[in-house]
Image (cartoon, rainbow, N blue to C red; front, side, top):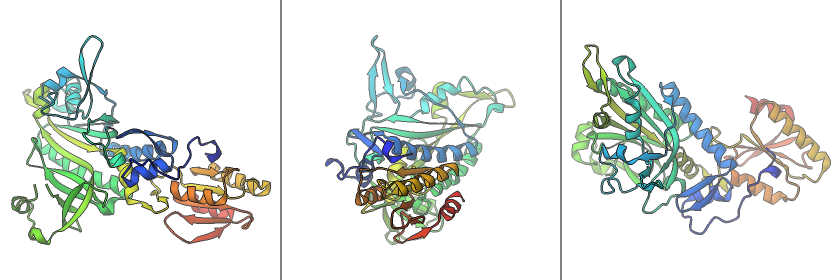
Length: 419
């Protein structure tokens, strides 16, 4: 992609009403556009990052046996009344609207009811189970106060996987598997070393559930680390002696390390709550009807994008992990008005594209050297390759997360980035 063709521009300042680092840097870098509080549009660079995150999630869900589908945002009132969750006293974050004929609708904030209803048409026998279905789509929540940039929005991207099992035992086998699957996702996103499997309240579904919390000063939650090696923590909120006893934690509460954290995923056992409400049953091997046992596994690509920025930035801008960066190489022509230099830069650009390397090429003629270098730091692509009059046929190569640069030849550059 030639940067001269990129319609987005960087900004020196972020909107004054933004408090979070992720929103400030993503807006300044031209990744997102703020429509209103808690609602952001994804511009070309931002969409590439969001898609990279979603694809990593998708690959791991597929590998775990998941089948992707896409459900509707518009939700039928009658569907949600079956579980009592249409009532604003039960769920206070609904966005609701109506058709011209007066029929009430909701904008989906989650999809347990919807998926259970769908599966009544597809699950009939024990031979149909287990089944794992997931979607990645937009969700809406009427947050009282949208804050923290992409990490708490009113409109956001969400991955939901729902498991359908014959019984609790079959469910728990998959449930335990998903703990490892989630950690693989976080590791691939470059945040595995700071992410903890966190014991949390199970709400109305079970005594305990699990969240995945990533240590960050920008987090809204507080966790206590109970096992550093196994990456296990307890959420500050069902932190009691009973919980410590249930999980055989022998360390005194006062001796556990406390950290601020960002919730980046959760997994729940749903049991029969939704299958019972919708008559979701299957015939067992004896021909008897049994309720399907369900589980729910959530993870937000957009929230993860915000969290990644919070974890990977300096005073100059973003430092994207290679796995999610919009491009792998930022090719910067410092002297685009010099025909000889530009010819060499064009040659490198063509060679990188030919090698299948995702590259953003700063070929702007009107931008000065200082502006180009500052923009490069702000956008945060992992590897910067500079073409200049001073270096001739050599390329100055610098990793975004490192201070030192070194000179390489065209062949060395191609060898390095093609690996």
